Image (cartoon, rainbow, N blue to C red):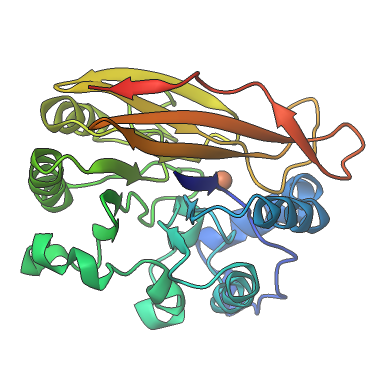
Length: 306
Ligand SMILES: [Fe+2]
């Protein structure tokens, strides 16, 4: 049995005090939004309780689907790196960036580069990867379980939170899903934005979701994990060889409020029985007192992939 934990959108705070120059451009709107609203939603005691609860479940791997920071200040990336280091080592935690992690254009080394070893392919994946895969998608193999990380994060105009996967990543993703499927790997895809059309307004959505759906339906995948909408979401597609489960988790740090669901995370138990993959889901939700996490209703009962 392989247990995968999924959390998303921790939006780590508090925001480091930004200098005047750092706030020029899009960061200003994000900074005002954080100081007015968002700091009240995202609570670091809740995030700490979630990570402790998750660690106690002893997952084999942890998937984190972006929006780790808020307005992409260089110091936020360092702060998040310290949080990552405390939470889990790079070989146990795999991440993809969200739109808040690519809020503005900046040198890679000052931003996402600080998390590079959490989003690098592992040695086992080398025979599958084409040379042009860097930096996304990455591929990590854990026995006969494969995890592919896509980036849909890109700087956009103020008040726009959409993203793209793009042709280059789609080509590599198609090749990887086909090869891994032919060898009966259990294929997990991580992406920040909800991967199907119609889940968001144009302003917030994945602009090439139609293409992603087509790649998934053509080549298949077993599990797709995402964030972005800060609420529990589940849907399924029919792939060429069985179901494709698509799950989005709430923000890992959110207090419950009238407009925002409380924090939660998922666990997926994956095993191969007589040559067929089985996957079941467990949900852990913030309790009413905001003091810990309790079992919630599963997203789906066991899926069997023939
Ligand atoms: Fe988010």
